[in-house]
Length: 88
Image (tube, rainbow, N blue to C red; front, side, top):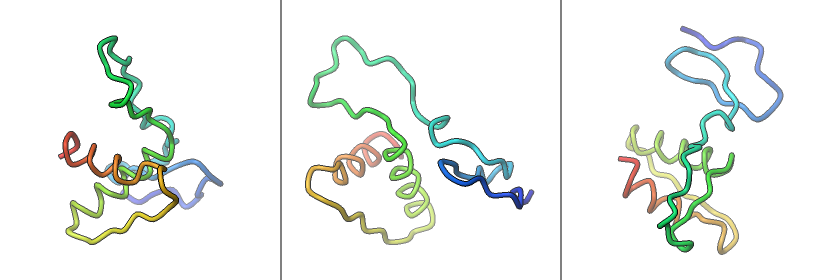
């Protein structure tokens, strides 16, 4: 099925399976944080983490190289490590 020809102005991605536009915020994990979780292990889901993880998963699934760039401390390495440890 093809995606709608009307592309929303911002904040959405297309679901490949059904061609429907969905908000990135609808893809976020809303699970409660366990009381025993260590602060240093927390990654709070945001639109940016959803987009980054999505791009990483698509690149890996299609055997493509990908390079994440940005300022120090923005989570690039953490997102990749989390995906490789939990996302595969």
